[in-house]
Image 1 (cartoon, rainbow, N blue to C red):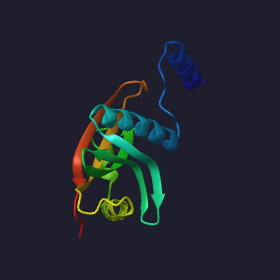
Image 2: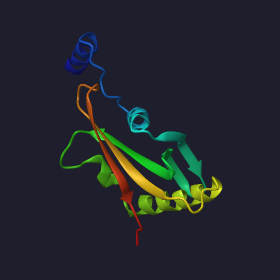
Image 3: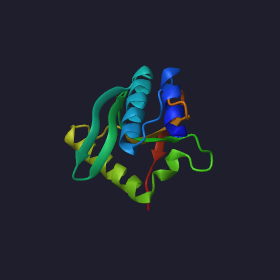
Amino acid sequence: MVGNVLARLRVWLGFSPLPSDRRSLGRRGEDVAARFLEQQGFRILDRNLRTRQGEADLVCLDGETLVIVEVKSGQDDPDHPPQVHVGREKQRTLLALAEAEQKRRGMLGRSVRVDVVEILWRQDGRSHALRHYPGAVSNVH
């Protein structure tokens, strides 16, 4: 009851509450990350790319460099920042995907890197903090 009243009050006051499911939150984070990267001069080539090697949230060009981007969204929690959820297995997947995309796009010999973009959402659902970690993922053993 109190939760419903608070939710209605937030909407009435113009706040956009955080999506309750992870998929919506992730999609929203990917939209924010794509806009940010475009403002930084990146060209978005693909979104939500799925291949045999795995999946990537964004595939971009930063100048002549092919960039695979993993977007992590979460609530602002200093003890558990979203980027810590890019584990070893996901890192291996992203590196394999980067190599496969480089070949598929005929970009052998060009630079390739894997970035992580972290989106931190506050409770009001509108304001967020964004952190970009270029080259966050490198060789994983």
